[in-house]
Length: 114
View 1 (cartoon, rainbow, N blue to C red):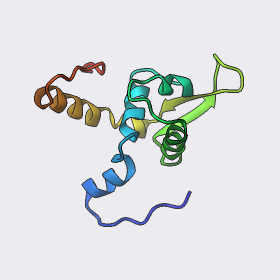
View 2: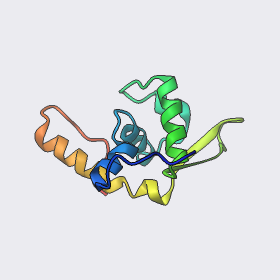
View 3: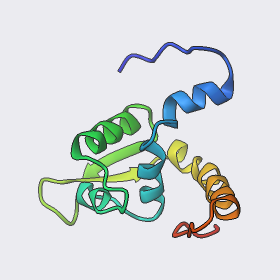
View 4: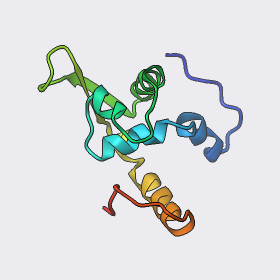
């Protein structure tokens, strides 16, 4: 996959270009929580559409955040896991979680402090 042209050298803008859409960090959250299979991601409460999930997983693999391997649990299926680069997003998720818990009434966390 050809690298995208950067709109600026700002690290915030560049990071948002990689993970700043509505769904990507939710897929990463699910990986952090231990989900590894496509159907497990579909079962998340946000109800991501299949075409969007397939696209986000493909993007995460292409950008080096996620790797795939043949599933040990389901014949013909892939198992997804975070790479070192993907795992490095954990503190970002934790910061977003903490901010949401402090500032968005009615929220609750499944992603527990590391």
